Amino acid sequence: MPVLVMKFGGTSVADLARIRNAAQKVKREVARGHDVIVIVSAMSGRTNELVGWVEETSPLFDAREYDAVVSSGENVTAGLMALTLQEMDVPARSWQGWQVPLMTTSAHSAARIEEIPRANIDAKFAEGMRVAVVAGFQGISPEGRITTLGRGGSDTTAVAFAAAFDAVRCDIYTDVDGVYTTDPRIEDKARKLDKIAFEEMLELASLGAKVLQTRSVELAMRYKVKLRVLSSFEETDETSGTLVCDEEEIMEQNVVSGVAYQRDEAKMTLISVADRPGIAAAIFGPLAKAGVNVDMIVQNISEEGRTDMTFSCPVNQVARAQKAMEDARTSGEIDFHDLVADTDVAKISVVGIGMRSHAGVASTMFDALSREGINIKVITTSEIKISVLIDRKYMELAVQALHDAFELDNAA
Ligand code: ASP
Ligand code: MG
Image (cartoon, rainbow, N blue to C red; front, side):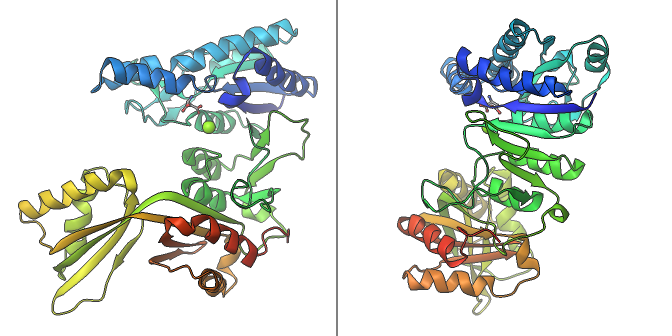
């Protein structure tokens, strides 16, 4: 029988009534002739609570025990979902990661999936089980310890199962009814997209449209898994939600698909560093080692062998970045006059695969911002994305202005 993967996020399994609601959707797909693999998250709020308990018990916790505790939320929902399905006369069985076994690396709290052997679950399907309910977010290391895949990791579990079992589709049920052209809380004309290309979703996911874990999209793109995002709180059919798919499957396409934002950015400028070969490596090596996620980088015009280097990073990493730079100065790796941090900036990006074949996106973007009197501090571009740093107080205005300028409320 064709396999369908259905993933239910935390709000979709937040209590017993919602688990029953989700189970109804599963039962319907079984009736349509699918063998179903259901991936469940922990009940909403539970993982945060577990993380809190770990941190309170042991601030410098052993990551193996963090995983032992934090993975447990999913075990509860997997068992409850299997019981609920059984009560509805659907032959179902729950699986924890180690029982599959979902093999991962030993990078505790950020493990990567290595392999999902099908034999155990296939054997149960062959015996008449119709639904395998799998605890998301967890696996087992080569050492035989429980691992977790990083926050939001159940999405990645779901896509990995869809790839391993050649699923017809991977449906991600959540509390929104799809992927939008921008955040509807900021722009009420935001429009739900019927389809979005993997590359665009990847940019939007990593830019802060928090619908899917970034790694799940990377995985779906690599294995060409058809991924669908839809609401568990509405009546849905085959056409509901947003399909994340190969760009060849998208016929009509706006040049720009969406506007994303990242509220808590910081702009850091190293004033007057030596302009010499190796200087970028000497700056960004220590930042990487210190775990600073550098995003945009601009090297300014140089004068008499000195230059300014500007980069952006999340606001909560500013202290770490400052320390890394001071340490590098003390050890003589770099020298600079000053390190200036601007912690009141936000990043706004427009994303669209249509940019590959259409000129003028940058000028439309800059025009729209200038009409609102918004000053651009840093610009970076890629093949399908243009990002700018602006003052945070203009973030909402900028999102709205760009949504208008690219007429994103109208479908192509
Ligand atoms: N429960 C985990 C988390 O909250 C995994 C997930 O829901 O995807 O991060
Ligand atoms: Mg999630």
